[in-house]
Length: 388
Picture 1 (cartoon, rainbow, N blue to C red):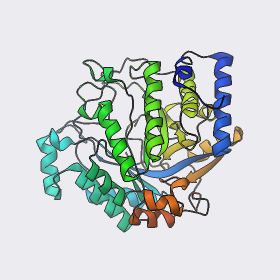
Picture 2 (picture 1 turned 90 degrees about the vertical axis):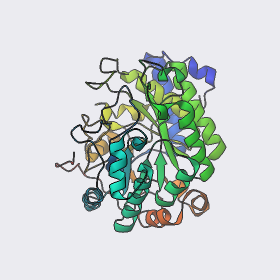
Picture 3 (picture 1 turned 45 degrees about the vertical axis):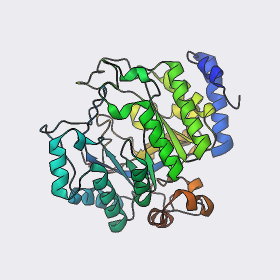
Picture 4 (picture 1 turned 135 degrees about the vertical axis):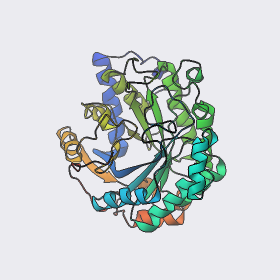
């Protein structure tokens, strides 16, 4: 099997046992044909610029309301300190992650931004990306949620890549009692519009699906196909994440069932066979103890891993040590390779002219080797002291 139709993918929703093993073998073969026996990761620092958010996702513990402990914005000196620590430990990506447009909901957010000299959160993000490029060797990756066309262009000027998780194409999940109720920025049309604007602007993007939040299997397939169609139009999607929902205490979905390993494996395999071969398939290694099994289902990337900062979206799930990921990958015949936030295919001169602006391109080229991966491979265990 080299590719799947929509109908064929629909029919795979319950495969287990030997059928699942055959599906995974097909996916792994497809991965090997394009990506070889290498699996990549990006050595990063995680910069949670603000945990204020106007969306109220039913599974999220990252977002905080004003007045609760730890709520607010990081100050520029805090950003500098995270970046400084990361640079000392060989990090090359500064991943900005934040709540969506809190200033539209909270007067407190507007007051903090005004004190800092900005009117919107995205203006502050752009300024901190400039700071990173000016004061360090790291290259920003921006996860700022939904963006208009002008904001996409502004992000491109200061970042090597950006990201927005589609999560699901299901409109059912914005209904009352569902995962995306009271989340104006999580409607599928808004997420797809941002991906389209990024394609029109030539901004390398990460997107993906979050499985187990109430979507059906067919809706999961439809979400992957929507991403594939976007990639066919613009060629700007460098990686697609298949991420498993983890139930968290104190959330609407704290008692919801989590996807099991078979569900993750079949979804990864179907993603590999539905999406264009050039699209990287990623699954995070800190959300499942047996993460190396993902390799047998066709992934070629473990995503951003930090020796400095916790996964602030899933703080209860510590990053595995990079040398442990390398060891487990090698046991399955896969070599772990450190990449940059922008994939090698986007760094050749022909593609770079379309997909990268001058500042991030210069920063990336100072870090890239001849193969487009990180010039200095910094495989080592994670630092014992991780910033919260």
